[in-house]
Image (cartoon, rainbow, N blue to C red; front, side):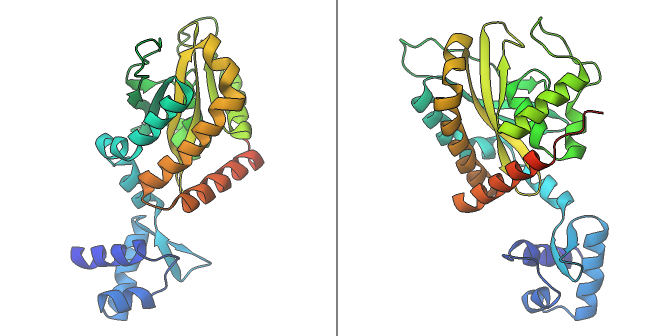
Length: 270
């Protein structure tokens, strides 16, 4: 039984578009009745979903979530580290990679400038608050609604006078992130330290990763619009392709779709 289900999952995941019952029949040589019964079991548990009005199937959100959020940090870092190093080279600031997992956002990898004459900020690794850190804001703004709710704390910590802790104000800022496609932190955790991050959009899950830079406010703020954003957005698309093992064109299509949807469907502030 388990082997049959695995074969059906493989047939579904390997198809370039939603499949009907005929495709797994050809791929697995199982009887039609058996396939119907096993597909129904996969639909019931959320590993496969019906689409196109019924009768055709794709991998279910539950399975996609497990597969992508379950990837080890080492796997993701290996896929994306070259993009971070290039970002450091292009912008001269510390670059970071963040991911959503287990109801929170963590910084999981940092690349710093190698030039000993260049001062830089090292942000450390680990949890980042969705109300105050650009890496977590970029994820919270674009992730699926049911996952976003886990990120927004009921009583967010005020780090200093720059920190926003009012929920409606936080949601308004996330709407701005959705509208413009990037998030900033301007001394909201440590005064004089700023960062900017963009989402790494993953098909059907939204942004469960983000990429950005951090440094002294006097250096970061002036370069956000004209220098930092083009670099970060280009690297985010490449990172998305590397993480999902798909082409850059596919990742760019996913990214464009996510941004368009976000602009059309702002978060509710009440």
